[in-house]
Image 1 (cartoon, rainbow, N blue to C red):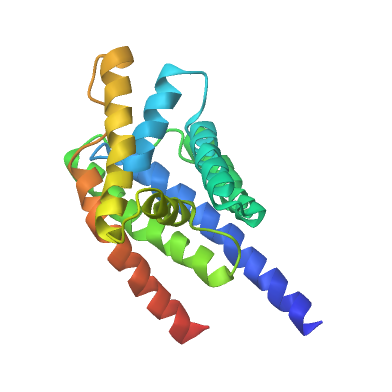
Image 2: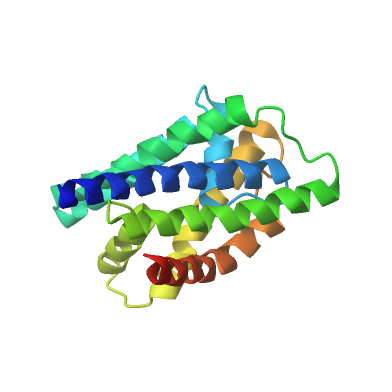
Length: 209
């Protein structure tokens, strides 16, 4: 009974984490200060195809999971699709329903939305880690790429992985939308702040739980 209650509490923590990640993503997108690296690609795909941002997120992440699962020959890694699905669904709920009319009409509003987004997104990520449920699609992708290229340079590998969607999203935007996409100063800020924020939140959770 005790283990059952613990599983339920972890599941609720997991779902809440997915919900908060999705909220952070939409707040950052609506700020117009610069999306996260991977959302640069997701937004570009949603604008040139029939896909929503959430569906584009699910599609891209599913491709990554498939690659990692096949390369590592570990079927258990497919469980990472659980968080991808929930985050994608929640993204569309925020984008199309809850925050459908939210706009950054002023620079101050944009900065406010971006700041809130960059604070809550890693908070949701930390909740996923603490829940003990499958997470970390990009982390597993990074480790697989390190093995592919036979390198131990984790920081450089992660920077390349973050740069790849920005380049793809920007190229797609130039080719099909005649603009440079959603990558901007906020994208760079996110890359260098998300890690420390997650670490801070994890330390907080360890003290409370």
